[in-house]
Length: 425
Image 1 (cartoon, helix red, strand yellow):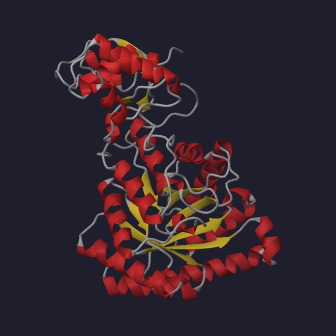
Image 2 (cartoon, helix red, strand yellow):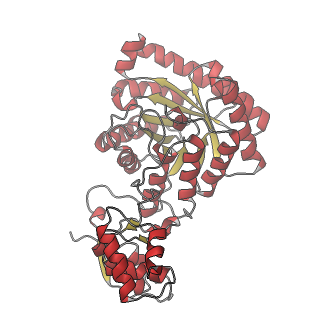
Image 3 (cartoon, one colour):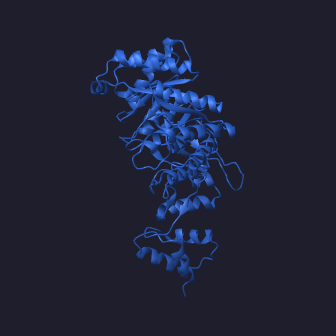
């Protein structure tokens, strides 16, 4: 089968429709599993809960948390974990403040809170929900895998009884319940089926499957999600949302989350900048990027970098320069061949082609742009383009001077250095 072709038809400056010139063969559209464009898949933002469990982060002020909450809203993120109020007074106060802000600002984003399967964790969620007058979903969690059962001296019967008691208590408090097992990906099928079936029978309406320790591969995620949909959800006869919550210890968090979607997951949990336990959760920004490129969402993501940078500042963490999409170097190039091709596309007044000829992610879809730098690997076209962009008249003498300096340098020249070279006698 010949891959379907992609047509780049956006003429950003001229407004002219391009001819249907075939530019990209897309092998991504081949194979047994394909994403259904437009299928509803929602996102749950864990930045303000699981994200803050990273040992290197600072817990942001409530003012910063509220800023982050509004940026989630701006990006169209559907749900947010606003904390674990049972953890202590500060956690309780922040959860209440965030819930009040959602109500005050009439935000569309829907809150949930984490809770161990204990009444002492569930009760604060119900209190805050009643105080603020907004619905808060309770994400009740407990360990389930054989290795955890061994360590804790738990039996499956004990876990089932704990599940029944916690879920029934939460429902009796008027809370919506998402039932979460830690380390689902390393839990035997019989235990998975028993625990989730028990939770659903007791009133839970969401089943969250977890890769708590970052063990999963895409094939394993697909198998688990498919098993739960077919062996737990379908027989229940209830409308149950299936969520996937992954970690990135093997660098597979995004791939695993996409596999979960292919298998039928309805919601993916993620955190800004991949914050979270150890090496972090599934990165929210990369889920948004991939879902946009796969046609699963179509929304304004121009504030994506602002969201990530705000979280980084608030948590006192850094974004690596080579981080996909939002890193400083994501859309920068100083390489002569790459830059020359991008520049030629820009001169054709074709933004889409310029942003895809040497990039798999069109920068303008995320409020960003290609940047041409000048360094030791650059050619004359880099220099000429830089000068044009900065409103400086091009001359052979200045171009040669800048290029000579770049070739002697061990790094990309700064704008200040280039400007000085432009004015040198």
